[in-house]
Amino acid sequence: MRVLVTGDRGYIGAVMVPFLRDAGHQVDGLDTGLYEGCDLLGGPDPIGNRKPRDMRDVTAAELEGYDAVVCLAALSNDPLGHLNRDATYSVNLDGTLKVAQAAKDAGIERFLFASSCSLYGAAGSEAVGEDADMYPVTPYGETKALAEKELSKLADDTFSPTYLRNATAYGASTRLRLDIVVNNLTAIAMTTGQVRLESDGTPWRPLVHIEDISRAFLTVLESPREVIHDQAFNVGRSEDVVQVRDIAEMVREAVPGSTLSIADGAGPDLRNYKVDFSKLNDTFPDLKLQWTVRSGVDELARAYERHGLTLEDFNSAQFVRLRRIQQLLGAGMVDDQLRRQTDEQFPGPGDARFEEKH
Ligand SMILES: NC(=O)c1ccc[n+]([C@@H]2O[C@H](COP(=O)([O-])OP(=O)(O)OC[C@H]3O[C@@H](n4cnc5c(N)ncnc54)[C@H](O)[C@@H]3O)[C@@H](O)[C@H]2O)c1
Image 1 (cartoon, rainbow, N blue to C red):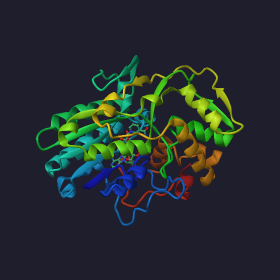
Image 2 (spheres, helix red, strand yellow):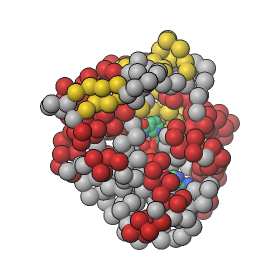
Image 3 (cartoon, helix red, strand yellow):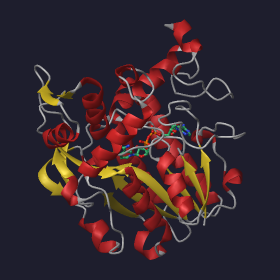
């Protein structure tokens, strides 16, 4: 299949693109390049001559010839949504719909949308299935819920969107993110010797490794249309719906000499939900998600060690999406809607041009 992945230069894309290629698909990318230079272990394959592209400007003509679009591009977490609600709506909702409409107009039948379990929000204590009501508690979660609803209106005989509601991701990627819980706790343990919890550790979190996310996307890409047409799937493993304090304990065990601490005055986090993954398992019995959180923590620890991750890296803009966006905003390289102000690739976070501005 010829597949276009939007957001291919981000955390999940850096793992998913080679994964889909290894499965025999021809994969191209489209990305505005917010995180160029934010690299672990040398980063993903070089971008070559490809120009940065904002998905909010995509036309049907540029999508002609593809068999499927995988839409990963987004402002990818809650803190970014709080920084600028409008920009989050513009990219995550308007941008997604722009690409979807362009794909439909170009005659592309398959559209895989990277949705999120965070659209369940404050869902209570029962594990939620795909039919559950959505109670997103952040602009980010709202945009995922609204995008699914709008994409569903485009579904017809010629267009089959699928909504993959990923659990919170973890795992090593050459475009690492340290603003997600497992990656964060493992990094802070390795760079300070302390597994430090900023919330009281009681919230439930469903987790999934990024290679297993890629595996699920591949399965949907290759499944018969009637199985995936206008369907939502929670993507994760029921064994990996854990409390944040359990993750902290796993990290403490995996990082020799580390100790566990809870920040003063830490209360529970608003996001708290358990998720039911049985639809994914029942629909795709041959899909076997392979990673456990513990094996992911070990993988991360090895990757951090090889990279030589320091506390300075941990506190920098390199691996934290919000800090990187603030850096680009501060330097005037993007405007308040996060539109690029230059056609050149953005410099990495250690570039002298950022130093001058601060
Ligand atoms: N990582 C997780 O825990 C997680 C969980 C659930 C869902 N998701 C979803 O998966 C997708 C990928 O997440 P990620 O962790 O790789 O995020 P990421 O922030 O690492 O990558 C997002 C990519 O999208 C690109 N992008 C942003 N705005 C764009 C625009 N206007 N036009 C073109 N490209 C643009 C960025 O440059 C970046 O390369 C997102 O949609 C995210 O919401 C992620």
